[in-house]
Length: 426
Length: 186
Image 1 (tube, rainbow over the protein chains, first blue to last red):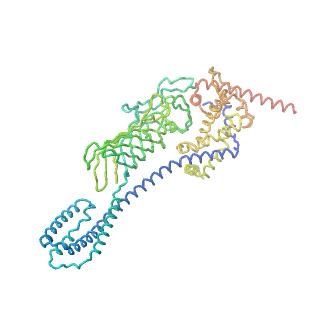
Image 2: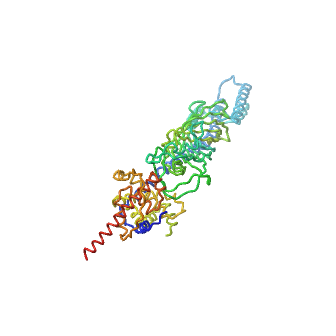
Image 3: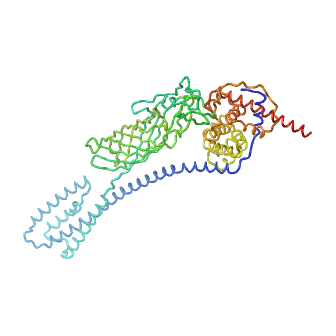
């Protein structure tokens, strides 16, 4: 560096130069900083709202399930009680019957039939959910009581008047209707079910779906600055090849059966992508770099090209996936589903580096990325029940249709993800 | 409050720390912006843009150098971007002259104060002014200046030589005027 006396004097003089800025400068700076903070707030609220809604829906659904179980238990108790009333009523009616044809043998046969039917019902009741028709049937102990009462020569039960019997039967039928109504209400399940999804795998930036990224693709090698009179550099500098990096997805979704074999879902999730590159030493210094279509931009720090350091390009996305699921087999216990769909993703932040071959440096600038990405995804999932819950697991592929860079020209980069997906429906 | 604590608080978004950082560097940085522009209003605009960048990119400061030097580089960058962006500076900023001019060996004694010298620098055409500031005051090499401004290294050298010669002639004239004035008064 020149150390002429003149330059040294100029520098010394200029180091002394200073002015007090007017207050309006700080006011405007302060406003801009606060504005930037405000811009970040909506994202926080969106995420928080999403989590609260997801939590609320889960809680609601779990409560519904709990209520349903307790109601079913109540129904069983009520059914037992109403069955006893019906049997008591029929006993009275039988005892007061003036039908001469009703002999002891006949009574015994009919009682035996009732007993057989009741036993069958009892077995069925143990195996499956209690049906509303079964509720009207007398339980075993009632049938036994009937048999005893009817086979006996002398009636043990006190005589009941016809009016009373009618009242009892009417009351029973009313309570039966109510029960049926409650039961129908309870069995009316919500068509939507909530689930949680997670996926772990690897991501990379591809040239296209089946073509991996050329090392120069994410740089601006084809463009050279319009105001650079020297033209493109004599040697085209190439950046490090990008290696696949760790990636994962977490999210919630709501699912609805559209037909016997087709289901639709919509969700909200967070997707982390990463790729690995090798770079040189960091430099804390201002520099003009070229960032596509000859646009020059200034950076305050950059990395030299080289192999000295491993760097992870990270991309953080919020995703809104919409999927359709087709059941490929007929097994209700282990359904094999093909899932396909699209998702809208929003890049919330990234530390990924851009390469400028003109200056042979890497620099960070997330403004150069397309913030909105459209993805397509597909997965093959096999489902199996675990206790009362449904779990699906299988391979998943996701590909971004949008170019990762705003001004990528004929060298678009597309994010691609391969992973193992697992979804859980409580 | 020491610098690292100040940085930490600024990164946390503490308004008082941000104000303190601004107060600490605003005065010398406005002097820097003044040298690159043609008016105090423009200099304040550059200062404002520069400080917004400083606060938005503070997380990028790795601490490997002086914070003041880092802020200074941001200010220089902001000033150059401002000159490129503002149409009234663009005509003057063209670097069409590629002929190499030798740098003179003249080293006149500077009897001017800082503001007077800065005012003379600001009278240079914007291209000369920018290259002179980058080379003589900031200490960048011509290769770096070429990268920053997107020009040939040779063009930077040529611009600097012309700027220096012009400035020295003005300084000499100024000194002569002052002497003449003294003699006339005597």
